[in-house]
Length: 82
Image (tube, rainbow, N blue to C red; front, side):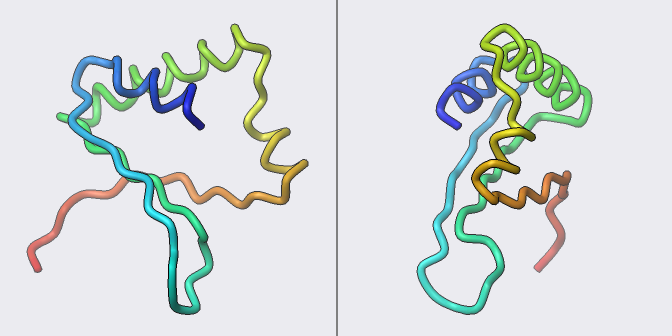
């Protein structure tokens, strides 16, 4: 995870990211990672940079998820008025 976050932080258009840990409640996920970007175009470039870094490191995140029983829910979101 740290390798991926360092790559994300170095990308043009990166604004901020947070890793949150569930401390109470019946929620499904123990950890949530949220990254904020300038626009959707920079997100696609960041995904490509992460994929290239993983490939260069011979790291397969899907294999790791399966091996460790991790369920990832990867999606894009936008702010809404509260």
